[in-house]
Image (tube, rainbow, N blue to C red; front, side, top):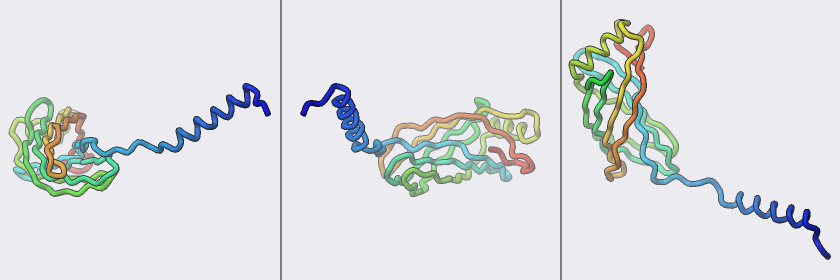
Length: 156
């Protein structure tokens, strides 16, 4: 029995599709944690910083230590060090809350945002993190922060 060229082509094409499906999706194991600013709150002389810590890996991670530097409008707002021991499941996100002292220049800019003198402020975050008792490379993120409507001294 002799196969024609179109039939051979179809058989090879089907074999290629089947072999591609058998390899499965790529498993993520060593991607760094992602850290983003989730919210801020001025509470007296303290600043409450909420961070969204995201694990995109297929295995759980433990955030053992974080060294945070946060600035708004190119002025230092907060620096903090914490040892949260935060367990983050595979492909999930946790909110980490840090309470720290605010730097006067950054706090002044944040208060101006809260009073409506400006609509938004740029923020930048740099964090050194320790995951599963191993130091990882610095994490950087940036964006814009706005006041939370109807919630004085809260920002997102």
